[in-house]
Image (spheres, chains in turn brown, yellow):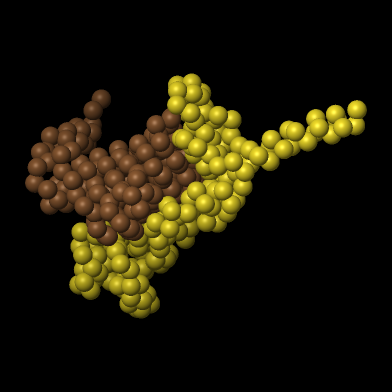
Length: 158
Length: 202
């Protein structure tokens, strides 16, 4: 049985995908929920979302499906809305696949995929609140899936 | 016979020592201690197998198209070198502050007004800031009313922050109403310390 709320949320979900991504940075800020912010930035780092590339500055918002890319001798630190902290070393590529922090409606999700480079991860509230860590909290790497139970860890991907 | 025995003992020990020193290569995951020293648990899995680690500075390496290798412990020095670059880029730890409100009111108490001024200084000192405000209430009144009151309190604090120059889009507000009292149930849930907004400053 689908509740009204579920239908609405599925509708919103579909809307998020059907919205064209052509208008540059402002389109993101206006239409997509912010899931994280750039807190530390060294060197040249960009976010790629669909066909749009944004050079990142300190304090910039980040969105679902952003692919973060750090160049040679560059690194960045990101904080999510649930206090999860991540940082990327140089020559790294990481996709923010999914993020939901709505403990009230039991919607918790953290999923990132690292394609290459280095990632330092410190768990936030999602890791503390989730009852299904294997489903709600996932870091995908080229060599396999990493599941986390409340911790700090380092990943290298080639 | 003695030499043989010693060799038998020494060779594995030597290999073990070597393993602890050697830097991991390729795809790997290292479990680290959190700031308070606690250590969680991490599993690495692919189609060919899985490994779980739960002790500090332990690494699981995975070669291409292979199952994750048996975990091994790394020396602290090796780990420190590997994580140095990302550790330097680690964002500051989020800070939490409590603001208290009068009965059935969205006005800050006098004490909390003082805290507000101090927190504002901390906010201005940061290069970037984003804030979560979560409103709470005591258990007097209906659940629905309290959900709305919690949101009003969080909204009031947001307005104060915006008036003080904080960007509105950097503030996220939520209400848990009476659902999350600071102490469990009983007469305590009616108490003043439940009339609060928790601010998380990141």
